[in-house]
Length: 247
Image (spheres, rainbow, N blue to C red):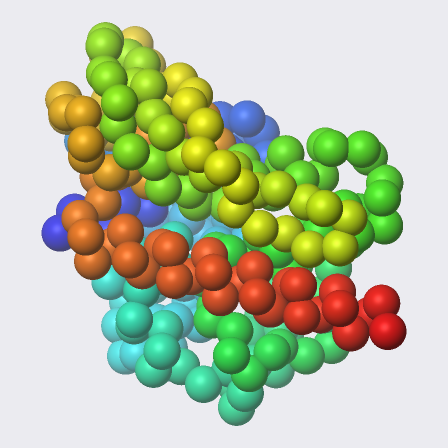
C-alpha cells in the first residue's frame, strides 16, 4: 500500500489546486503525490479543515496515526475500517470536531444517521452546502455538478495517452427528489501535469479513483467495492432524509 502521506496528497491535491480547501501550497502536494517530493505533508494535511478532523477522529477510534495509510484510505474510499466506529455512539464527537474546524460554508447537522460512516462521501453530501442547494432548487445544475466532482468517483480506463486518460464512469443524476448514479458516460481525465503523474501507465480495463478531474490512484477489486459501497450508502442516507423532509 502507498504510504499515508503520499496517499493523502494524491486525493487532496485536485481540490487544493483549484483553491477549494487546504493551505496555499499545491506544488508540495503535487510533488509528494507524484513521489518526487519529501515536503512536510503532515503540516499541510493539518491545514485541511475538511479532511483533518476526520483523520484525527478515525485515528483516535482505531488506535492509529492520522496519516496512517489505512486511516487515509478509509477516509477517501470508505473502507471497512470505518465499520469499527459506531457513529450512533460517537457521532456527536465527530460533529463537534467539525464545528471547531469547518469554515463558514459548512452546514453541520444536529445528529448523524447511525448507518453513516465518517468518510469523504459523508462530508461531501452532509456537511458541504451543495446538497441543500440542490434540494432547494437553487443554482440550477451547478450543485449537482459540484457534488459529482467533489465525491471520489470510480472509472474504467478506456485509453491512456500522455497526460490524459479516457475513462467511463457513472455521473450523479437528480430527478428533483432523489440522487442516483446515471448511465455510464465517457470523459477525459488528467493523469499527469508537467510530467508529474500520480499513477503509472494505465491499460484499458483498469479501474481508477478520480477526484475532480484527476486520476488519483488505481483501484483493485477490494477498493473498488469499498468505494461503490460507500457511495451507495451515502446516497441512500441522503435520499431517505429528503423523503422525510418532503412528508
